[in-house]
Length: 249
Image (cartoon, rainbow, N blue to C red; front, side):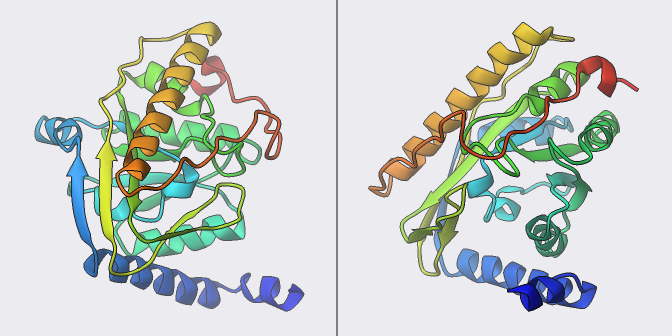
């Protein structure tokens, strides 16, 4: 175990594993049949040359590169943990950029970077419950960024007929080749400007409920039962999210 962790610290090993992960995602996509629901929601914003925030669950990030059909840059928030670094390496093969940080490590720097990215006209993606959970419980960061910048949040999920749910905290949805898959985009959520803490919490709850409903419906399409939402006490306890005033700098 110690040797494996040491090997993952080498840049060459990270690059090789990232390439293998990217190839597996490519293989799954190319050997499967896919449908898209709610495509009109991102398409309308792409056509109008407008950016937005993509909100998804950490357990459903595997196929994200193939849901993104625009040539516009896409930047995703990733943790600096070794799993996050591997994700960054894999996503780079699909042209994704990354900002490193989490709710517990480098939060303020990361969120300021995300604000700068959005204000420059680019779209960002955020695992709303990542990187440590609790599973399928949205953190307030995306809502705060949307309130500060005026861009909408679009929920996104996927499901497929052939899957394996890992025992990780997020119940990672691992697809296998030769599946039938389904992307589902939700309607954009427009967040009022400069919300106070109570307003952020209200929209956070709405976003969480919408994404959970979207995921439940996508899973039901293939006869899968619901992935249970974690209790508030599960997962690592994160420090509070930076306030809008802290992020405005």
